[in-house]
Every structure is written in C-alpha cells, then in structure tokens.
Length: 93
Ligand SMILES: O=C(O)CC1=CCC(=O)O1
Image 1 (cartoon, rainbow, N blue to C red):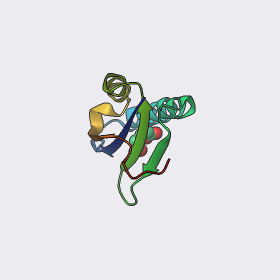
Image 2 (tube, rainbow, N blue to C red):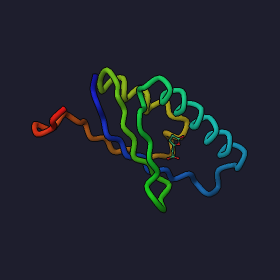
Image 3 (cartoon, rainbow, N blue to C red):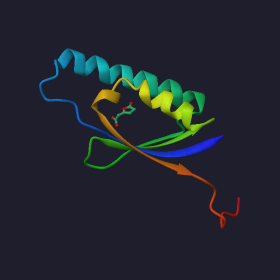
C-alpha cells in the first residue's frame, strides 16, 4: 500500500449555474464518502477558514491515486498538491 498526503484547494467559478454547483458538490460528497468507507480515503480535514482540505489516501499506487483524483466531481475546480509519504525511521510502530 502507498500513503499520500493530499491538499485540495477548491475554487468554483462564481458564475457557475447554482444548480450545477450544488449537484457537483453533492456528487463529490457521495464519491468521497464511498472511498472513505472503503478505507482508501481514511482522513479528510477542513483547513480552517479556507475552501480547502487535507486528506490522507491509502491506495495501491500513484496510478490508483491519480485515477481517484481525476474522477473527483470537483476536479475541474481544484488545485491539488500531493506528497507521497513513507514511514519515518524514528517511528516506534
Ligand atoms: O470541500 C472540499 O474540500 C472538497 C471535497 C472533497 C471531498 C468532499 O466531499 O469535498
């Protein structure tokens, strides 16, 4: 398995049809919650005061993460930063 720290910054255009915006956000929530229940998206945290989140993904590969992120309904309106993680040498686990 491979762990990734992912930051998503969302910027939905102000002129997007409100119905499309609300449907896209609802689809994003359902998609995200399905992945959370599967264990592939174990953490999602809101960055206080920003339309941004910090997430942890636990996936097989960078290719799988790419596929997951590419299919996010909000993907067209996001900037995404990814940091691959490996266990720290001082971790006692
Ligand atoms: O609101 C966000 O940060 C974007 C997002 C990712 C998963 C979700 O449900 O919303």
